[in-house]
Image (cartoon, rainbow, N blue to C red; front, top):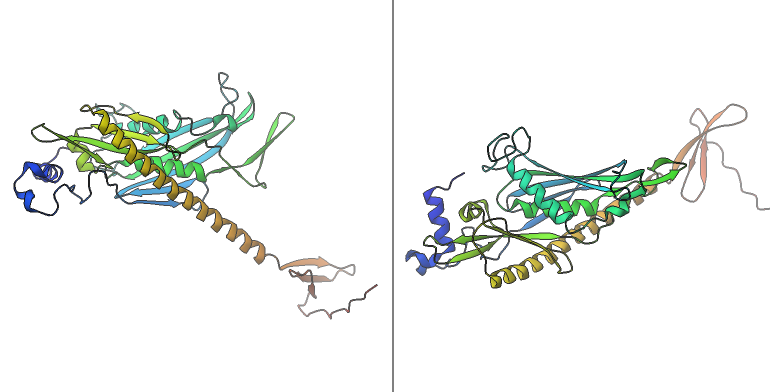
Length: 351
């Protein structure tokens, strides 16, 4: 979708206020169109789903959901001792105005995926698989016969610019939130033990990206670097993105710059510092959300045990009479006959 003259003029005046005389007397000099400074990020909201392996992330008006599932499969012969991590991205038709229909010349002819979905899927694969965030060898059940295949489905519900950061955050949170069933092997057969406590995935680190755009001034004399760009700023940059991925330990995982104008080294270094601070902030949000979710699940388990701690058991005596015996937490019981009348209490005899 092309920019209108009014949108383009408004965005340029906000990013490059020195180019216009009118903005020199205002108090918003140097602020972006939404009031942020160049390296400020929008507010991030993270929510974990009721089922394990579900997460939802919002950055500004971006809205992305991620779901992780798993199944036991046969490994390929070339990698008999490694599990699988499959990533799929669904970019809905009403996600954003930039989405192109299937079969467009810029997309994949005959494919249901849009070019935006393909690009985002490749970015997530480089981030998660390229940095070896998930330990695929730990997904092996029996070498050469059975491994876990973990599937990550990312659903982009709203794209308001920089949807990649929201998708990556939701994906990492869903992988950390997921629990796989315990599996045992006996004489060549595999048994999924649903009655046992599920196990989390083995994750080495949490790669988290921060996206920047490089925008040139109208006369081309200067350029600006903007963190967490909106859709307006993305179109203004002409696709000149800079994606820096840093994990929770402050380690640089990757730098992605597909197209666009050149970026000097000092600018890249300042972007790395900004991405490091953002990664630590997002990691803390994910850790807090996981801790809160675990606490709530443990509390619900205790409530269920307390609820069924006093249970009613139907018994049949030797004479054929049905009795309902209620056992309480202290081990005491109160018996009722089949007609509902309480049985007389018997005195305890100490021997």
